[in-house]
Length: 488
Image (spheres, rainbow, N blue to C red):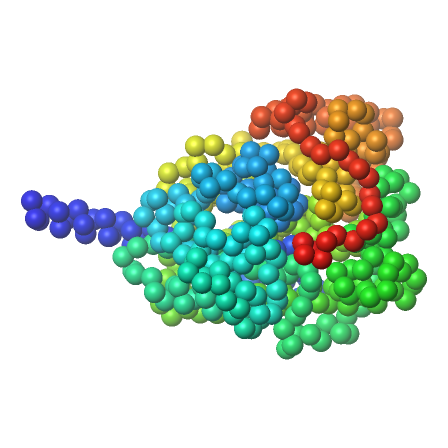
């Protein structure tokens, strides 16, 4: 009996040792084009690029709601926001909702979360499914954030956020036993506003000119609410997250404020790349690199002047697109670029699949393992997007949209079952990837609109949404007042 127990113990330890670790790095509001591996001309990210050159770059990855908290819930739980319930930035993620780190924990993984969590604005207490959980209230600050250290104490940790969160994560890694696989989740603040680079990167981009995008002035065929947004908190003539002190300002000279804002945004990304270098070096030194799945991604995209807008929330490409880079010898030993449309809801089922853990009982996503390893003929060719109007940020209407491989249709429900009060949008993405021409008024495309509306209804219904269950706030219109300083 003793020999049998010893054998079973050894077998269990051997299985644990063979299961891959997971290093999950989540950035906030990062655009793909702020990374070298996605084509940035100015932002040099050699360490993130190295992961891409050794793994998979998912070229067309999207969030299903372009807002921090809903997106994080979908990444962790594998379902749309209306199912996990976090449809805004103020709602708590349900404690009993399964997540991929929680299921990995149940299967024998050591799990830890360090950094921005931001589901439950004022709640920084530990969440279920993690051995160690270290976060803060709200957005956190680039310098000297107050942290809740696993529920044991709250204290301000001096220093730059990206460095501090990496330090804490690495301290936890150094305490892990080789007898147990681990899953480490790092939630960076960067590059979320208010963009504050480290001093060493403050002037990196001083010589790079950044004009307003051409589409900022191509609004004649766009809905009126987009023009109204120009002078608000989320418009290019507004305060630009404190980079413009006197606003609104639509003078030609004010583009300098916009340029400075983008420079600050880029600068914060450079520190994230430094963090990736530190983590990778440690994995190499401890000979764990090739037994670790490294995921680098963003929670949602970011508008940097497209259609005259900043921030996110809308269904336009810059708001939807996120980077996703995965280095995993268990998945592929050769570098690949995947063109198919991958969503935030695919992350949880993919991680569980790669780690040999029990799958989610309910998911709106799909594991991309088969897609990467040999192609998946059943992979999606369309998906839907939704966002609900926020009284705290009254600059974007309710949004319901469908994106196919080649087309996008966006409409803006009023919220009371009455007819839409905003013009809809239709884009031929194959021929107009920059969404410069709204084709909604073209009579020859009426059939395409009907087809897309039907597909949108079908996709929504598959997740439990129809005209009766799709609840949303009343659209009270674009307003000019600034949001409460506490929630910016």
